[in-house]
Image 1 (cartoon, rainbow, N blue to C red):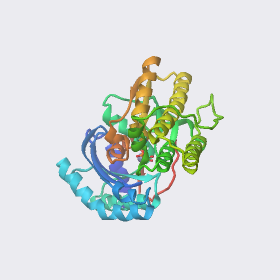
Image 2: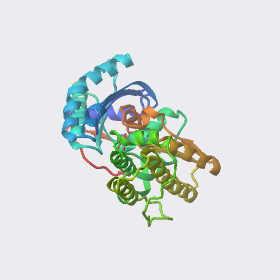
Image 3: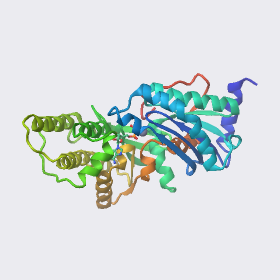
Image 4: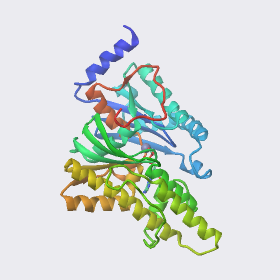
Length: 354
Ligand code: KG4
Ligand code: ZN
């Protein structure tokens, strides 16, 4: 039988198979990650090889360096994932891989690795959206969580309020009109001289700072579900530069704290509006910025006041990892979506509702 016809049949059989073991590959940015996930919820192994220490030297991710390091690390990460899971490649039912969004050169390493594995093992290859993966992280941390729910998606690449109608049915209710919130955290961290990635360092520094600085900026999106962060980002950068040029003292921890309060207020305000408009009783946060302590605290309090249940992934599943891809891949399989052939390639952007 022709190769892809055989894959279609195997893929169809997985829609109803009792236990499905997915091996998932994630290489969209600077983490080389492979996981083994059973039935979308049970993580047997989740190995993440981070390149942070390398990219720190450059103040941000250098795409070419990321690709080279993925190539160097990926087979070791696979060996470790298999060892930790106690499974062999022959136990795996499908290979899932992030095909976008992300750095094309970095993604291509994972995509080609996954294609090779799937072809050699003669098992289906599932092309997964990185953004859907971030939402899937919540199914691992909250075993009873099921759609529909409202999701605040906050990562380095995306900022959006998403209606998750079903596991594979997404509707964007609002999104950023300029920078992502993660980008904004990283830029502010950089101007404060904090190491890459900036978000966790702002989070830490803000804890010892005061919310006592008024930045000079306006937003014009009040009352809508869209976000804008570039005005605030520029205002913070200008504040720091002006202080430095005038040789005036300022406390980086107060800048971090004041900035973080404004950003998290904006996220919480729009999320509250969306909850009120839609009437959802479950709110989920997803993406790297979802690890932010202050954001989690504010969302939790807001939800309590509104009588809404709040869900956030465990911290290790907030930032990029393979398990989140393996989780959502299970629901792709059950919905009959994502089967890819060997022409699969990497794409830099994907639609959340695509
Ligand atoms: O979801 P993610 O790991 O990668 C993308 O898909 O983009 O998100 C990375 C972003 C970075 O901008 C990083 O600074 C930010 O998430 N981040 C945080 C925190 N941890 C990671 N931002 C604020 N507070 C944190 N604790
Ligand atoms: Zn991500």
